[in-house]
Image (cartoon, rainbow, N blue to C red):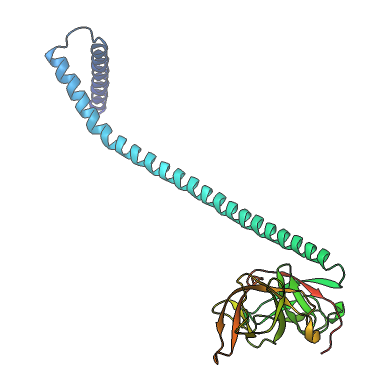
Length: 282
């Protein structure tokens, strides 16, 4: 039994030695490319390459797939990183635009305050605006504690937006000129050499225009004429801008003309307002 094991061991050593010698010889033969290969060498070389291709092809395929998967993973990670940077840039850009808009609006408020230096004014921030009543009212952060009372006019740099309709200690409600239940306002139209007086009766939300009633059919008013408050009725001071004339049409009885006025204020785009603090008769 022991002799058989020794014999097998010797045979293995001999086989391994022969294979090693054979591989060395084959390597030497392959290295010497200057001489012509024998028929046996050609068969051996071709066979070795064939076997090598069979063995290595699946391995190379797997390696390529692993590399492709890693490349895709790296590309996806770079894409997500870039996406995060883009989102961050967009957020910063939006914040920058918002701050620039706020600064521009505050600059307009300061310019307006300078123009109204002969009047007592107070600036306020819009703190609430109901989407269901967008053109009706806004809430501002000044109230009776700040000396605000009902009836005070509220303006922005572009013109009149409304007046204080109710007051609490630290907040007030402003009824806008665009409100469906608006009060009638005495206005004047600068028609060149003279003023044409009329009554701003309502706001047409669909057409985004005010309507002035009571204008004689015989009076010609040019488009672009400036419309301002008259100061009559002790509601608004004289000279606050309302808008500009954009057209006219006859009333339902064809007796007078209705003047169409484009508002000077963009009622969708303000967040800071100015209150004219003056005594009012309610």
